[in-house]
Structures are given as C-alpha cells and as structure tokens.
Length: 243
Image (tube, rainbow, N blue to C red; front, side, top):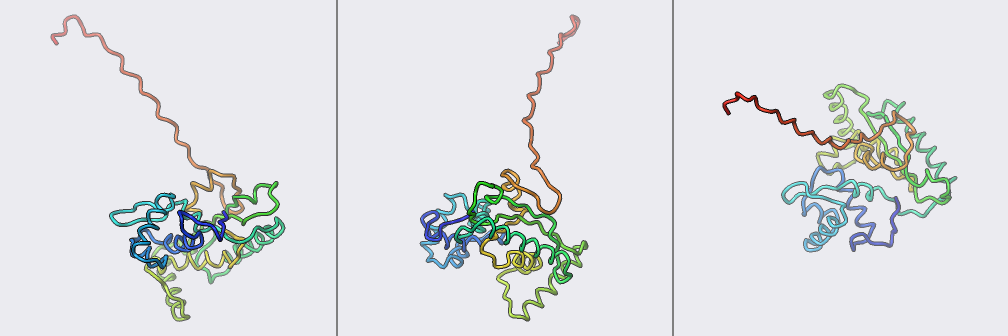
C-alpha cells in the first residue's frame, strides 16, 4: 500500500496519520490523551482527529473513552510513501528480506522464528512494472515452547537492550520485545518492504491475491448459511384423546 506524502487522510497530513497509527497499533486500547501526545496536537485538535479517524474506519471504539486501531488502520500504518520502484528493484529487496528471514531462523540470538511469509499486493500483478512497494505479511513464533521460560528470556533481552540505551514506551513493548526486535530487523529500514503482522492482517491477506513463500498455506473458513429448519409435521390427535 502506498500513500501520497503530500496528501491527506481524513483532512489531516497523511504522514502524520500514518505515524500516529504506527505508534498506537501496538496498544490494545488508548485514550484521547494518548492520541493527543502521539500526534503532537492540541486537545481540541485531538478530538477532531479522533472523529476523522473514526469516520475513515481507521480506528474503532474499544470501550468507554477508549479506542483501538482497526485492520484498515493497521494497513495504512504500514503503507509506504516512497517513490515507485522497478520490478527488478522490488525483486532484489524481496531476496534481501528472505535472507533476513533465514538469519532470524538460524541465529540463536533471535528469540523467535518466522513461521509464515505471505506475499500480496502489486508484486503479484505481472503487468505492473513500477511498484509502490513489496507487501509482505509475517507470522512469528517463540523459539522457546515453554511460556514461562520464553517470558524470562524476553525480559533478559529487555534488560540487555535497556542497558544499551533503548527506551521502552510501555508495558506492551516490554512484553513483546522479542517480537518487535525481529519485526524491526526484518523490515531492515527498507523503504521498499511494507511489512504487516499476519495474525492481525490474516482476514485481509487471505481475501486478496496472495502467495505463501514460507509456511503452511491457509484459507479462510467460509461459513455456510444456516439451513431453514422444516416445520415439524403436525400430528393428528387420536379420536379418544381427552384434550
């Protein structure tokens, strides 16, 4: 997905909206004060921004005075504003990305594995020569199967990164440290790679043209319409029935 760096979303600068959604998407829910601080706007402007994001379907109500980023918001937060690139450049970026995937899966430093990689978007359209980006969705899983041991290793990594000067903004960033460290490494500061979380974007990814590059393919289970139940046959009462 590509956005115009000089364009607007819901009447606000597209880059401001993208940056705001990028920071809010890792939180289960957030309030108006967090939106104000994240977008660096005044209180009155925050309410206007909130209404605009709701109208565009980029966020939704998560509770009383609480909101969360929707799937559409997740997609926009991963959008690129870079110039279009040739298919050859996109293919090179994809190969470099798959090399980073191999590094993650084989290097014991990383606490997780990449279990699925799904390619979707314009790169699957051979008639498109100049691409906005390479759309990829990844699924990650902890290398340590035991939950408690995995959590201990994660917090050891949190302490290690903290001593190196990394600042964690909230509890969720600490809990998901192993995940976000891998996600950031895979992105590799590439302006061509648009990376999405497969677990969050699965419904969207599997309903558009896509290709599984790594991992077991999946399909969305289609629910069949419930059959109309036939009315029970009316039984004739015996002649000697007293009621």
